[in-house]
Amino acid sequence: QKEVEQNSGPLSVPEGAIASLNCTYSDRGSQSFFWYRQYSGKSPELIMSIYSNGDKEDGRFTAQLNKASQYVSLLIRDSQPSDSATYLCAVKDEGSYIPTFGRGTSLIVHP
Amino acid sequence: EPEVTQTPSHQVTQMGQEVILRCVPISNHLYFYWYRQILGQKVEFLVSFYNNEISEKSEIFDDQFSVERPDGSNFTLKIRSTKLEDSAMYFCASSQRGGNLVILSGYTFGSGTRLTVV
Image 1 (cartoon, rainbow over the protein chains, first blue to last red):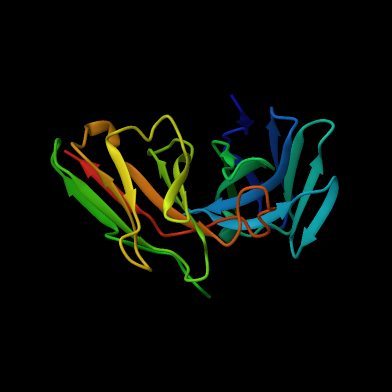
Image 2 (cartoon, each protein chain N blue to C red):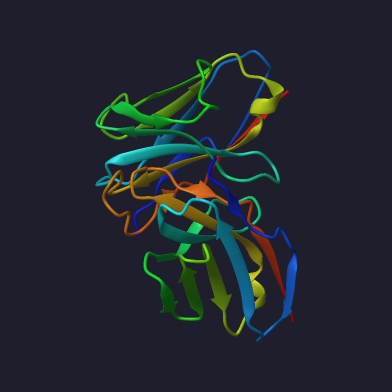
């Protein structure tokens, strides 16, 4: 059974701070990693994908992957109240069409 | 930007009735999926569909469920004899690639259909 674990939160940060969201996964064969943002009552929206160890930056977002330790994280710099949402980690192995989602971490950015 | 379109946005049905949830995937996408999310729970995979057949399905996707691509654009999920526990948000998704090829952009999800079984 593949597991993707996230702290449900809520994680509360002040506006302008760095929000750090973490995700661990159980399957060492995992190859593709995704971060989705989901506003309440809305569909998941892809923010970042990462496939190689290290950091990947896109604007205010940085995804970090460490396959040896089986974790992937998402950093949000200069957090804004509009970043308040649930962030879903999804993990996929090469042999499957299907990513496994974590439960998500609720992020609250307060002014 | 291309979108995955789902209708209806909200469906209320009586227990035991059949419902059909509709999706129009992005036109050049080849892989189609249904997911569900019970309120407050994780996004759960139901089924994937490629080349006019089911390619993978989860334990949730039992005989109560079926999928169909009746024409070149629509992708439907039918739930027979609905139960209270079928109440959830159902998301359709599509992707250009899948399987052993690296999915470069993840899935594009539709806005979802909220199914309420009463």
